[in-house]
Every structure is written in structure tokens, then in C-alpha cells.
Length: 250
Image (cartoon, rainbow, N blue to C red; front, side):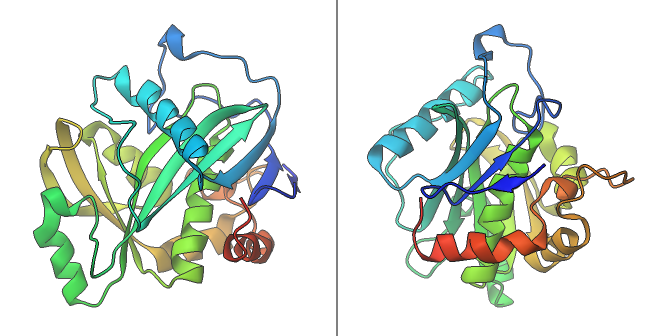
């Protein structure tokens, strides 16, 4: 699918309607989540205003709430966090946040897995945590891939972070392993933030970069690769995305 560009977006792209039903690792038949998406031009932007963060939070509340997970849409915006969102036709249809570890502010996963993260910090690994990921029903899988790819560019290429760590519900573990290459790292523990069990997974960003270089942009070609990496942008799109992130385009 072609990548196009709109001046006010980090990246804009076309995505056909045939790649459907991705909601944090599983589909849903909940009719309340259905809506008509009548355009297939998607824009990824930074949620750098109160209004944009509220729109992303409302999508989170909708997608997590029907499962009974606790999500506070009014949670304060942490200084070490960026939030990306995808929209089409005026609808917010995808969002994710990325928390960057630093000496002053840790990661959300510290609440439940501090000992495991400290082991990595002792090895001088630089950690970041994708969180609050939600993709609306009926939205192209390329939206998920775009959000992850842009977060990778921001974390690894611009700021030099080395590892993703994520807390996921046990039912989603195989999805993240199979589709992105995450590995077990911390076992299963109760997650106090959402009131559900969580498993800690880790992904080295050097590995993600290798997969992007190998498979990025190949989604329309015949390939036996079953991960999400063919839905990532081709590597020649990365310099433009990087420049817009550095220059604060949103």
C-alpha cells in the first residue's frame, strides 16, 4: 500500500479494507464497538494537546472497558511518556503510549516487576515500555504496525533505547511472541493497575530493526512470513518519519 504525506501528520498512508480485526491481540464480536470507517487514509500524529489525549483515552476506555479492565481516562500525562494516535475521517481509531525509562521516573512495569527491570538496568540496558495500546474494531492491521514502527524509530533511532518491556494479559502472550518476537522475561504476576494478571515480556530493539530491514514494506508481496513485520514501513520511509518526529510534526 502506498505511503502518502500530509503536512500535519508524522506519517499518512493508505490501507485497504482487507486487513481487519485487531484489538490488542484478539478480535471481538461486541456490536457496541462497531462503526463505519468510510475512508482508508490513515494519519499518525502525536497526542501533544489535552484534546488529543482525551480522544485517545476515550478509545482506550471503550476497548478495554468491555473486557472489564480498569482504565482511568483522566490519568495525568507522565513527563517521560509520548502518546501516538491514528485517525481516519475524523475518527480516532488507534492509540499507544511509550514510556521512556530515566533516573527520575521509572516505568509502569516497575510497580509489579521492579526486580526484573533492575536486572536489565544493571546490564546498562535502556528500557522503554509500550502501553495503553488500543486499535478499534474493523481497522487495518497496518495501523497497529505503524504505531509500533513509529515508537521504535522514536525510542531506538532517535533516543538510543535498547529494549521494549511490556506487561500483557496471559491470553495475549502468544500474539506478541508470534507477531513481534517478544520473549518471556518475568513470569505472571497480578497487575494492580488494571486489576488482571500480567506477564512481563521483553524485545531487544536491535532484533526489531533486523526484522524491519528484512520484511518492512512487503505486505503486498507473496511471503511465508507470518509476523507483523511485512506491515511495517519500508526502511526508505524511516528518514522522513524520523525528521518529522525530531521537528515535532504532529
